[in-house]
Amino acid sequence: MLAENYSLLLTIHSLWRWVVLLAAVFSLAWAVTGRVRGQPFAPWGDRARSLYVGAVDIQLLLGLLLYAASPIIRSAWMNFSLAMKQHEPRFFSVEHSLTMLVAVALAHIGAARVRAATDDRKKFARLLLWSALSLLAILVGIPWWRPLLRGMLSS
Image (cartoon, rainbow, N blue to C red):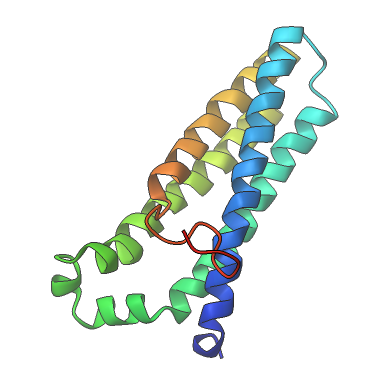
C-alpha cells in the first residue's frame, strides 16, 4: 500500500517542509520580538511553540511513512555497504533520517524547556535557542538538490 503511494507521500513530504520552515520562522520571529519588546509570552508564544512542534511532528510521520515506502531506502538496505559509498542512498537512509530525528528531538526538548521556564524572559530565550537549533538541523538535513516545490514546479 505504501509503495503504491510513494509519489504522493514524497510530494506531500516535500511540500510540507515549507510549512515546517514557515512555522520555524514564526517561532523565531515571535521569540525575538517578544524578548526585545518585553511582551508577555502567552498566548502567542504558546501558539508559536505548538505550531512549530506540530508541524515538525507531522513531517516526522510523513518521513517515516516515506522511509517505509522508498525504493531508495529499500535498495540501500539490500546492499548497505555499497549504499554507504553512494551519496543519495547514504544521504536518505542515514544522514537525512538521523539529522531530522535530531531536529525533532531538539524541537520537543525546547518545547518542554519553554513550558518549564518560570518567567516570560526565559521562555522567549528558550524558544529562540531551541527553535534555532532545531531549524539549523533541519536546514542541514534538507536535500536542497531535489525539487523545492515537488508536484508543482521543478527547480
